[in-house]
Image 1 (cartoon, rainbow, N blue to C red):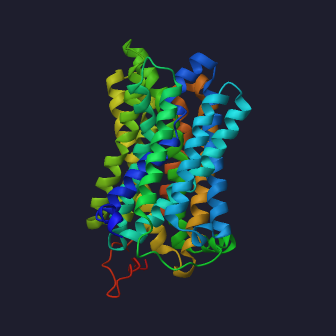
Image 2: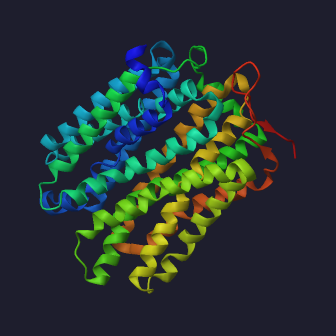
Length: 412
């Protein structure tokens, strides 16, 4: 215990930093996308397929963990650490097989499988260490996922002039560091008792309940927009850099900034939710990102500086609703089926990222900025489904017994 006391004084900081390091694997290949296009002849469609493989692997991995009860049989910290180790090795292996596209896709799928043991298990570690502040901690966790997504672009920007393999190997080293941090920290003292297998049928049953279905619909719309926007960000930035006749070296730095600013959106959204509620934050940030999605192609003639600023505001709002949807889902799901319900909601949400990414990357060469309108149905349908949700009260105080009291939903 004494050896770990230093780590355990600030467990949330350790968890979110480890999450940042581990999730740098997610878009590691996208960070060197321009280099892969130049050196290996990868097209936008090829880069999209590599991203789709990660998403598919993550979906399969989360469903496997959920249906087998793996997270209840082994320590969350151990699964996190092993997943970071495996993800680091698989990501480094991509360097060796990148020229062989089928193998490259297979390794990106394996990377997604490993990420299923990092992102969701990070949430469980937060619950185990900070049960009294789960809502605020979740905003930081999703914010670090956002920063981890942006990190490959920073690694590419800081290694310009070097081979594209270096930033990929840098992401693997970060994942190893994140796994080591969680291994040293261990599980928290407040983890809930094991619940056994998670039934996907039970999770699907919950979708028949009106309030949860409204929350899930908003989350699904958010997912349709989010990852496709992150995938498109370097393409959109590259267009504006070309119009400025500036160095393409700026693409990596600007892509990093546009995605990474989502961390600020998550944190500010978490603070606002304490006063205005998660529903208010989720609804208005989804409205803001959807509005930008609508007007962006209409402003394609505007000065590049204006469009880059608009992309930054889009990056700020597009992720800010994510932790709030998680909080709302936990508040509206039946207590006895929270695990299965959230597993199904996450699986369906990430499954929706696949057609969105496929559409936008396939049509980019034909439609350019107009392709973002394919993302517009996400926020529009999400807001329409959420229209009847009112009076959700969250962030209630901790129960006297020391457990985390359940958020309350006031009926319409």
